[in-house]
Length: 117
Image 1 (cartoon, rainbow, N blue to C red):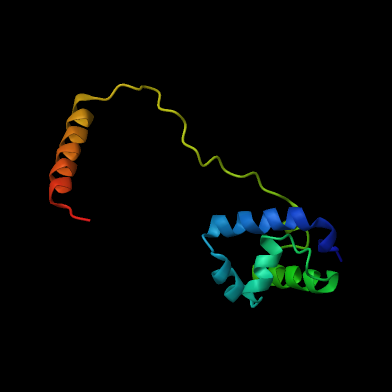
Image 2 (cartoon, rainbow, N blue to C red):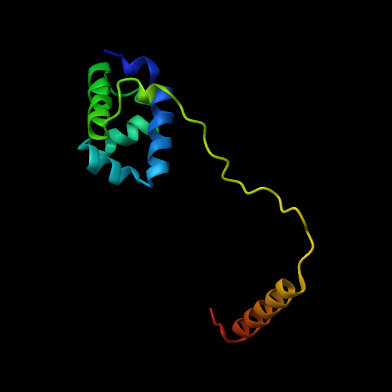
């Protein structure tokens, strides 16, 4: 059996990547795994340093069982996707795009005249 406690950073990054891929919040993940939310926070935010070795390993095994992970799946970090879009190939706006932006600017001008704080 793997001692996940010795691989806390890798396990943490793998779980965070999985949660982002699935769109799970920490609360949702806690409910799905039946692990208390404060413990999920310790696993993911603090790296599990405040959890003893046996409890940490038990939590990771619980996550593995819930999501049908193999024993070493959480020991492999998948590369993070590039969330920043590539710069546009052309920087000039088309006539149609410029007209649309001008129209939006006019709408915002009218809105700002009537909007009261």
